[in-house]
Length: 183
Image (tube, rainbow, N blue to C red; front, side, top):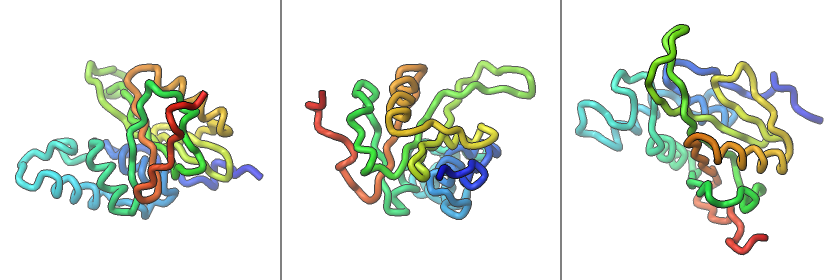
């Protein structure tokens, strides 16, 4: 039985908190992480900086990869960067908790597109055997499909723009990728 998208936890975009939303969507809980926790991580990473390099200078979010990795580690998880030159079929999906992608995002003010290049965090998760894109900018979760659909999705996504993929695993599990000699 497939879950209805209404039964899937999906935080919507607020401020520049896409990293927070990606984490909560990945863990399927609004209680998984709070903005105050991510801000505390920023401070711990750069305690002596007036302007923190790990988030927006306005304090509205826009957290960098260091904050995301530290937040996951605080919960007993690890994130590994996936080399886009490799074929996603190397991923051992049964060993993976979920995925977080960092993608370019256009910036606009109302109807006006600004010449700023921003980055956006999204999560991808297997829920009851179906993979979903849980992008906080989407109105609802977007079904990707089965394992083969997911691998094709990654093949496409990793060869456009400057998308980056992070594999999230429990603890420091290094069994998430098959050996290089896969045919």
